Amino acid sequence: MGCNNIGEKKLEVTIKRNKAGDIVVKKIKQKGKNGKEYNIIYKEFISEKTFQFIKDFFYETAMMVNLIHKNLIKIYFISLKNNRIYMEYMDGGDLSDLMKENSNLPLDFKIHCLLQIADGLNALHEPMNNLNPFGIDYNPINHFDLKPQNILLKTKFINDGNIENYPDLKIIDFGASGIKGKDDNQFGGATWLYADPELKKKYDEFDEIKFDPKYDI
Image (cartoon, rainbow, N blue to C red; front, side, top):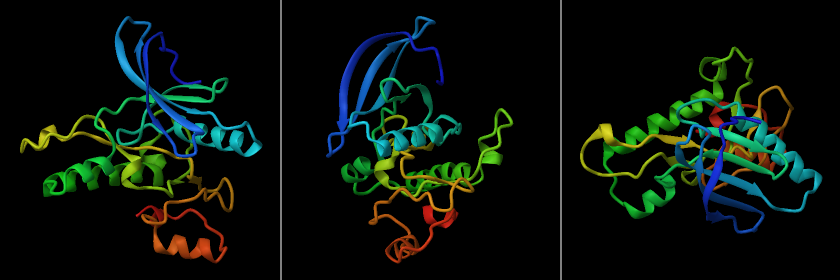
């Protein structure tokens, strides 16, 4: 499923593992069929194959493979046999780490980040205007778990005063997302420190959570 230009694997390095130990992210240097070498990463689900696990994996896979936008992570290949999602490598790390390392980021870079994140969210919330290169009928999507850790930088941030050199940002991790119209309630969870207060209120009161763009703001 996805791109079939995956050739010989050259080098593999583990770069991240979640606390529960059931998801691992690895970086590999890949040689494509055209002979060109490039870096990609894959996210592998290694928990026990429960029904919920399989449902979550296929759900995130289906969500991500159709997301085609400059501010959303690009998927190259999906292996259902190995429970892996192969995607573009973002050399700049995540926004959370950048904020920890730089307590005084330039104002114009902060504006740059906000605009790029807003463009990515707009692509999720209004997909017919943004994610439709092949005329496919996409439904609007709530991310639900937008946070600095889920925003990656394409390249390293360099504070040289040149706005043109600022890296592109991309939204990742759609495991908690919900698709409008697919189900009355597809809320998959959130990090409450960053979540919309009204979303938290609905969750605490066991109220139905339907698609609403404001939940991602």
